[in-house]
Amino acid sequence: HQAVAAASDLQYALHFEGRDLTDDEAYRHLLPKYNLEETDFFKKLHSEAYRDKALYEMAQVAQLQVTGFPTVLLQVSNAKFYLLARGYTDYS
Image 1 (cartoon, rainbow, N blue to C red):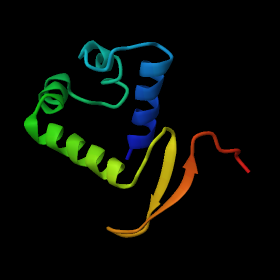
Image 2 (cartoon, rainbow, N blue to C red; image 1 turned 90 degrees about the vertical axis):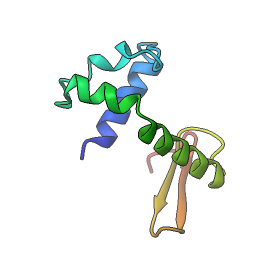
Image 3 (cartoon, rainbow, N blue to C red; image 1 turned 60 degrees about the horizontal axis):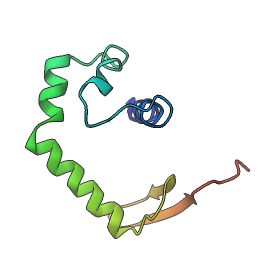
Image 4 (tube, rainbow, N blue to C red; image 1 turned 180 degrees about the vertical axis):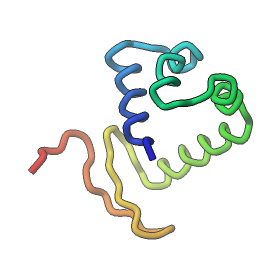
C-alpha cells in the first residue's frame, strides 16, 4: 500500500543522494520509515524468488516497448495497457 512512496524514496536515494542500489546500505535508512524488519528485508532482497520477479517485470517492460523513464502506463486488464505519459509531461 506504500509502493509509490517507497519507489519515490528509492528514486530520490539514487538520483539525488547518489546511493548505489547494489549496496545494501542504500536501503537501510528506509526500513524504519516503512516498518520493514531488516533481516527479512535483506533475505528477500537477495532471494532467487524476488530476482525472478524483477526479471519478469523487466521482460514485461521490454515487451511494452518502454524506452525511457519516466513512463506511465495504465493497466486495465492482464493484456491491455494505455500509455499515459512518456518522459516529461505537463500536469494539465
